[in-house]
Image 1 (tube, helix red, strand yellow):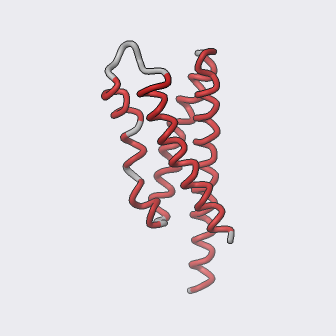
Image 2 (cartoon, helix red, strand yellow; image 1 turned 135 degrees about the horizontal axis):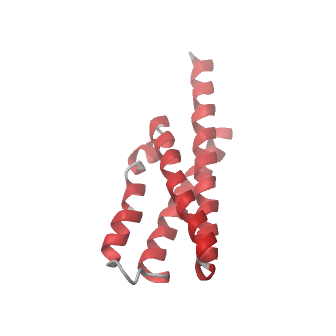
Length: 119
């Protein structure tokens, strides 16, 4: 039951972060200085790298997704602090990235405990 909850938290936060970053860069507040395609490549593409492993429940992919989400945490804190008009987007990014870190970390920990008990 614990693994299902942490997996749901991880995947929900992951896909929420992917949708938020994509919508933010393409529709909500596109950059005035860079093309939308370049912004999407820089912001959304890294999130696609651990997708296959996350969907298959691999611990290593969860670890890498947690590390990767810390970059989005930094980006969200910076946006929330520096731009009052986009503060809500930055705070949403912070919340989703924290959910991903917490969910992925607990999933890896509890799945390792489960595997140790079964061995």
